[in-house]
Image (cartoon, rainbow, N blue to C red; front, side, top):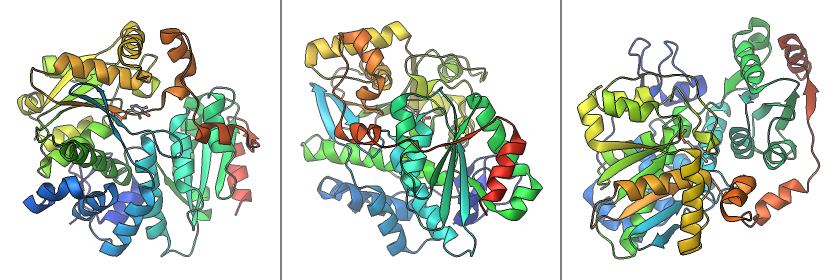
Length: 432
Ligand SMILES: *Cc1c(COP(=O)(O)O)cnc(C)c1O
């Protein structure tokens, strides 16, 4: 099986090329040529399978061109933690995706991609250099995912003074093959520098460069593991109903992975995409017009996306039929006030502390469930990362887990650079 571009101009490529390129040359996103149904025995045995076992079976169906034993070990290494299903109130479950090393749901995609890229890079004789620009969470997940992967060096570019202390400590204290470049500028400067590096002839002649962008197929597909895990945990509680699943969405990678899981035959009754004030997808569902625009800042900042990159993949899955998309997926929007009120309400009634992204998803789920439904919302971040917002809602922050405390105690190591490309280039060339 090969991977094709959603723009249908560039040729289909093997997985190794889709993963090292990230974006297709025609600007499209890669998709698997086939999403086959998994056999009935897989679904009937799901309740008794571990997270790793079920995910290995799924990985073998979605990733072609990697030996099965290699895929199995990449998957097992990625999933060193579980995604527990917690009943928040009768019939409403939180699937907690924040138990990875950086307490972000992006850990799974980043860890899987790092290991797969490491496997493909192992064949080459030159080190592979990953450049990533971050405004916070992506840098932490990517840096931690790639930590100590042989044959790969990661440079994280971040805007000095513009990321939270917790986030900064998650990618500046790792050492080894992770270098944090502290840029005197904005996140946009960091992105511009990375883009300039990828097209610079001297740099590309001197070193192998690649990105760890969230559009990469190797980051997208492993997120489908969550959905099988959700259903598996429902089944082991004796619940056989197909759940309504609500996904807090920004670039829509997580939701796309859920749609792909459903295509393989996983029983999900309906999807709900929760948005914050950045609601282009909801607007598309309501009007049939897709009108991407600049994002606005909200309390659920990982969902502050005005032009969701995976929209093209969703269109592709449904042959661009608006009716078909709207039949499977509902949309919903949350204001900052909705987010605070939801965190407060759920805490008061149940004691469960939602993070701002999970709050959007919880509220959308409750609004979209029908009588008799079982609902699952994806809780994508640990509430301790959003201490000030939680405090506004309930008067105190969430307890900070040991994992976060540990990296905050370690020494920060970063290389300060200006926001000029000439400086970055000089620095990178000197590293070879
Ligand atoms: C990235 C992120 C999201 C949005 O996920 P998409 O796949 O971009 O839709 C939601 N919540 C958190 C905490 C995130 O980090």
